[in-house]
Image (tube, rainbow, N blue to C red; front, top):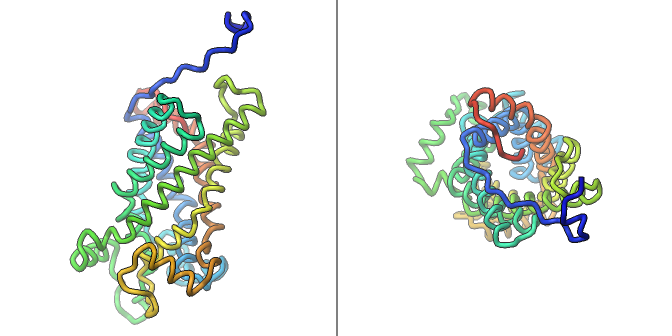
Length: 317
């Protein structure tokens, strides 16, 4: 039945802006879905992406061979425990919480879906980069790129042994190497990802007549998020720079004390523009897999979390 405004010929009032409460069930849902995503296909794609970015002469097949030679199937899961798990679980607790709060305040100041989405993604990405991702990505990259010492008959150092060795030699700066590049990547990645996803969602709503806030189907949600995730890979050069700054690959030509600018100049001098986009294909694949996990499994996970906590989940997925 039409409302009074519509009957009178006036435009319908915009939907009421509602602030979602910060709830343990929301954080548990976000953390749980991210842990599932990274433990299944997420980490293998991350390892392939990082290997291609660190060994820029390798193609996709070369990277697969290199990883397999490093440890068989387990080679594709290097850096998963504890670093990827810490990063995945805090994505729900830090990134999604801060992004949601920022998006709400941006909308309260009159920003549209696209602008508020970009604002939320940028601020959330920045918060996560400096809170947990600096040392997590650094240690994941160290695990994936460190020289294979087992071939010389020496037992390779474990994850925590490697972490403590870097801590003793270089302190906080050592385990957070490349954190500024991580921050730039997170701000640009999540800013464009959230913004482009919201823009795609608005387009889908317009095309399907769901502009009044009606629920999108699973396929519509996946399409909107996949568009945002795929197109946000435009900033792959920042990711390659980040890997170069954190890499333990032995390279006598690499300048000492790399900054973002020095790393970019070095990569370009060695491999040209193509080198700066090495690993973009697995990164797009990673974005699509993250989307499928969040959207396709979201309702099942939501139901499980509500049963476990007895609390209604209000977060989007």
